[in-house]
Image (cartoon, rainbow, N blue to C red; front, side, top):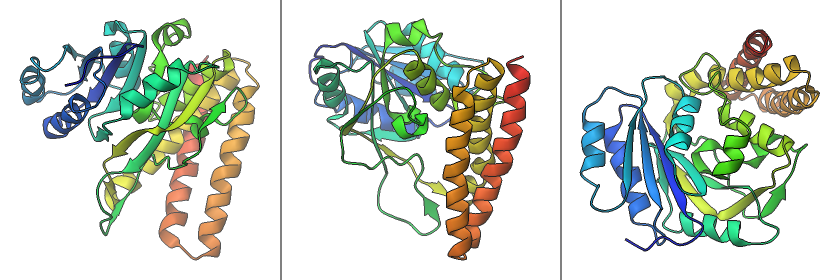
Length: 297
């Protein structure tokens, strides 16, 4: 394994009863050309094999195992933030496989001027295409770009491939635990986190060389997550609106325009599957908006 290079980067991996996938993710990080300062594994599941997977690799790197009984992806991120000791916290999930150059590209981006406070990157589907399976959280643009407040936060990146200055994350209070897969908010913790960071003046660098591959979803799993996906965005917008932040209304308008365009295109092309999925997203967004307005009060 390579020696760690500045800035020191803590890698945080969220996992839930998928020890085989966690092992694959850990091995990919350990095989990288740049070593992490440490790896924090946050376990919200009940499978005893998860702890064993971590223990088997303790001689290869500084590994921190955190048992987190509170469900939710935001709670997992916050547990990792509390345990991290490096200046930068890079997050990914157990169903992801970071590229060998992932941490090297992140470190290089933070060292450039003007320096970003958060780095995201490409997310591509893992492995060859398979009938009935769909890519998720895809970010494929080859263009490096800096993003500031006002940009739709889902354009900036996704939580499966995010690296943030730890102090910046702590300054805004980390991730909102009312959001995220496993919480009542359904999803959207990464969108909310990016939005609040940019609103606080952070520069986000989309760095295409920072690459993570993400496991595909089968059709049933994809349909099951469409409502949750929309709910998370709606909840994020509702929370900001209830706080009196007009950016929440702008974000809701951007989201409605985006998904409305996708629905119109699906209808025009007579793509019944995609149209149905967009209706599920819309239903989730409406429910999430109501949830966000209520919990923020």
